[in-house]
Image (tube, rainbow, N blue to C red; front, side, top):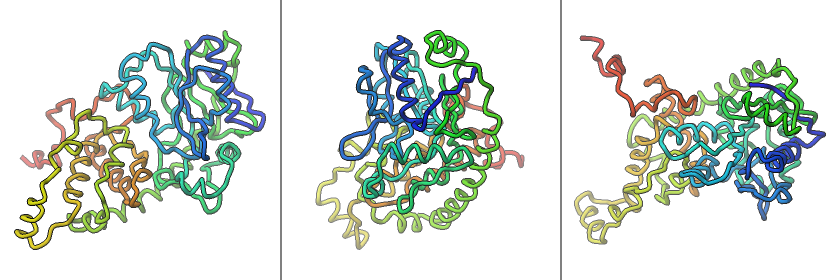
Length: 379
């Protein structure tokens, strides 16, 4: 990897937007997929072919209503036929790694641009704050010189962001490093040698800088604080998850809308039992169940839905928390999934989204795995 400094002149979002536009103008890519401002004060991923439209791009948008990797899988499930640069936060990049391994993203024509992430706010709270999106985003980026960014008073970061220990860009063809540098002046660009030569040849940036000397220490400090916050969230969920009855109590208001599934980047099945007619029961079934048990909760099978999905997701959950964002009832879906995923992945010595080289645990068999958990080591 080679390193360059991108001068931002007080507007890191604008500087990166111009850099991405230059990648199209110089023929390095044909299109760019990135977070962009939307009418009504939101932001969402958009695919740009016209550079005159790219002023709308806000790479560090303070809201993330949809998971970028999920949208990328729609663009690149098969070959999009063009070279596309895609801007992803670390949680989105980690989800993309899992989806590549699961054959849901074809990476051949994709240039992955990953960014150090200050965190995001829930969309409703941010909209109600009246804050200007790019101004607030630039403020948060500037805070990352010394540590974790904070959202404006009365808004707050999403729960998943407050416990995220993977907010630094660690993978990608181009990585935007903000931790340890003053974002209002410059951000560091790390790029693979071949791509760095192409970018330099196009006069977009000069790769003559050293890697940021203080970045690792800043990232370590951010992770230390968030690790403590995560342990607290996990401890609270452990208390609730001691029994099925405890989980049923915590998730009692679930309406089985499937929103958490729809916004999960890893929940990719084209055919899902919960979208089938399997659970479209005739009225007589509910009446018979009530007669047999004395009472029948409606909607039914809510815990079956969460436990089935949890069984599918645990090895590849990357803790982005978009399931929380999608839930209309405010259920702690992400806290449960992140806690269980942390345990399962630790047990299997696997970290979702860490590397393309690590096979997904359920795709391989190791004769000596789970010796302690199964009790086999006692024999």
